[in-house]
Image 1: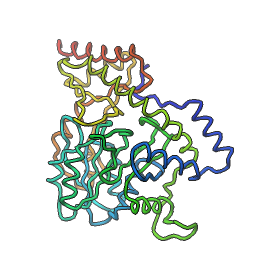
Image 2: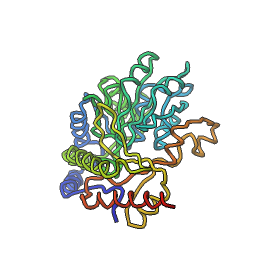
Image 3: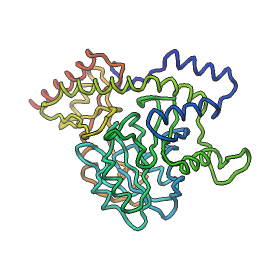
Image 4: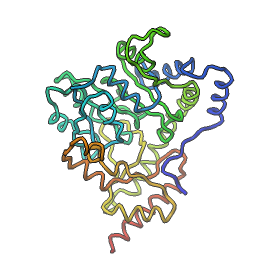
Length: 363
């Protein structure tokens, strides 16, 4: 079986966890502080704030910008539901902008169409490890005085024209097991704004700066030292893993380019794509899925239903028509690209796609 994802936990990660267990300091101690410092340095940010998940990272970032009831936040519907639910958690209202059909990221022109007097922020999602068009988004945000909270949960190490994610506001990362690096679960927010970082630290720990002195309504969104210990080791591996993902993506693209009915992923000019997913667009997706399944090759559909068409949003009265997002949901398919794959396995994946597409064309 060739899996769609393969998290790696080695002996160094295990030893780091055992060391924390022996220390007696398990929750948000010195390992968390060191992980924050090392992660900030790695991504090129001044500050990093560790939290319990990518979802809570998005939630805390919005709260730190004082987003709440009566406000609107623009994001994409072609993403995991947390990209929009974090807006609902604050009491604000999500507004959905359509995507660029080539890169699958939020379309700046569509953002402009969704801005109202109530708009307070934009959440661009760096989907599949592909940076959004942040220059255009930043220009829109500056013109309308909007905050930017980047959903970088799939984009550890991605950059645009050499700039790290978070350079335009705050960037939120997830360390879920299938991500490019993991802590088992957990999240991180990076920013260059000292005041914003301080506000996030306050919010993640029950509104406390001083023990038992609560300045604001906060939450228990802390990271454990066990998670941070894993993260510190994974940080020493992530650059090599990302490069391996890019090499694997290039191999698949060489094999699949020019095959009728298969559109390979495009990299935005100036972007460093980290290929959390290698996502193709297929004219015959169901047939390819059947072919992959028959040969024991894993796959993923990210995402089969855009957020605005999910039950929770339909029940809230959302009737958006987003042609590019809806079209993408019917044709995208993610193929294995993780670092553990061999060249033989990559060829097996490509061969299966090509054979199935050609067979379907004859029917």
